[in-house]
Amino acid sequence: MTSHDNPNKDLALHFFNQAVNRHNADIVHELMAPDAIDHNPGPSDAPGRQGIREVFYMLYTAFPDLQGEIEDVLCDEERVVLRWTIRGTNTCKCMGICPTERAMTATGIDILRFQNGIITERWGNSDDMHILEQLEIIPRLPATASW
Picture 1 (tube, rainbow, N blue to C red):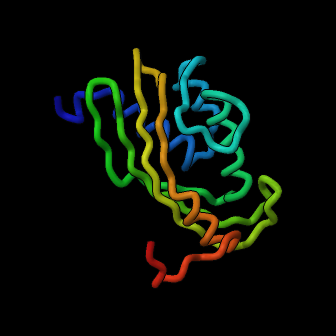
Picture 2 (cartoon, helix red, strand yellow):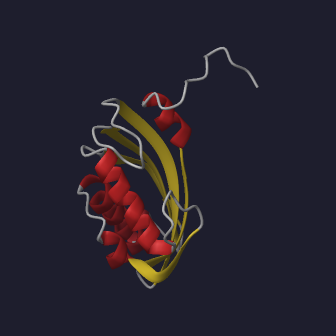
């Protein structure tokens, strides 16, 4: 199967573009099942798609200029893997953290499982510590630090 034959790839790219670049968190309710499982929830107490939607709203608040791009896409019959980069400037208070007026660039990977054209599961990983370092919320490790 070529990527051109996979409608889930197009849906995943549409989901990312709407949620990140167009700040349309409602896409979560359009493209995710009501009982979707988020295996790596963000800082929201709500489960599943409502939690994902709330995290997007937190991002839009903290980084009003949030934008992203897809670096790689891998897919099979029911899963799409997105490797992405997002950028934004922290100009508004969010989660009790005052605005830093600093820019950040973050990378991450999402795996989306589709059934019948909707997302039923999500696994995600992002470099949250690097975001906090760039915003100077936590100290940056020295380049010479070794484990």
